[in-house]
Amino acid sequence: MKKVLVIGGTTFDSIIYLKKLPNPEPQTIHYAPYNETLGSTGAGKALNLTKLNVANALHSILGEDSYGEKIVRGLESAGVQFVYDIDPRGTERHINLMDEEGNRISIFVTQSSSEVNLNIGRIEELIKECDVIVLNIIAYTKQLIPLIKKYNKPVWTDLHDYSIGNPYHEDYIDIADYIFVSSDNMSNYKLVVESWMSKGKEFVVCTHGKGGSTALTKDGRWIETPIIKDYKFKDANGAGDSFFSGFLFGYLKGKSIEECLRLGTICAGLCITSSELAYEGLSEELLQTEYEKHYLGN
Image 1 (cartoon, rainbow, N blue to C red):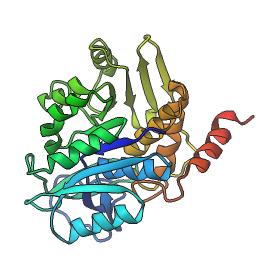
Image 2 (image 1 turned 60 degrees about the horizontal axis):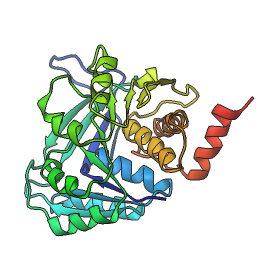
Image 3 (image 1 turned 45 degrees about the vertical axis):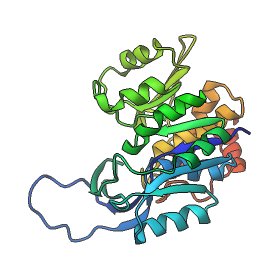
Image 4 (image 1 turned 120 degrees about the vertical axis):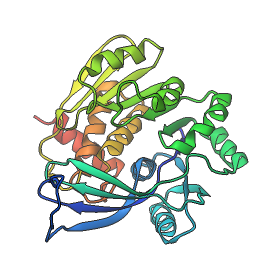
C-alpha cells in the first residue's frame, strides 16, 4: 500500500466531561470527570492509519517539556513513525469541555508557533518518500506549501469547521486535491462544495456529525451516508480524524467512494465509544467485520 505523510497536529489535552456545557456566568461545577491524552488532528490520523496497517509518517512540532515527552512516548509506543521539530513556545495544550451530546468548547491553554525553525532537509526527504500528503491546517505547515508543490504529490486536507470566507484556509484549499470539511458553520454547504469542485478538485467530503456525511465526486454525483446508530457514545474527540482515516484507508485499497464513506463512518463510530483519539481495538480485520455486519448483513 502507498505511504502517507501526515504534516502537522499534535497536542496534549485535558478532556472534561459535563452533562451540558456551562452557561456564560460565574458558577461552581462540583463534579467533572476528566481524561488526559494525546490530541490534535495529526496524532489522530496517524494513530488510526497505523492501526489500519497503512504505512505513514507524522511530522509535527512540540516543546522540550514534559507534555512533549508524553506525546513522543504515546505515538512511538503505538508504532507511529514520528518526526518532530522543537517549538520554542512549548507544546500546545488544550482543555476541551465536552457535553453528553458531543458538543465541545476548546480552550487553547498554550498555542504553537505559526513559524518555527524546521529541519527542511529532513522534511523534504519525508515528502520524497511518500505517495500521499495529508496537510493539516496547523499554522506552521503553511511555510511548507512551496516545498510540497515542488514534488507534485496528491494532497489531502481537512478543513474541520471551516467558516465561509475565512482567508486562513485559502492556501490549503488551493493546494488540496481532496478536501474534507465539516458543515457546522455552513448553512448551505453544497454551494461551497460545488465552488471547490469547480476548481478541479478530485472530490470533496463534508461531514455533518449525527447527520452523517456527503461526498461530491468529479462526475457530479452526490453520495449520502448516514451514521451507524449502534455505536454507544462516550467521547467525540477524534471522530473526525477517524472518519478521514477510514475513508483514506479504503481509497488506498481501491474502494469506491461509497465504500470509503462507509469505512470512515465505521471508524468514527468506533472512535466515539472510546476516550482516545483512535479506538483501542481498531484493526483492518475489525473494520472488515464491522463492514460486513452493518452493510452486508441480511
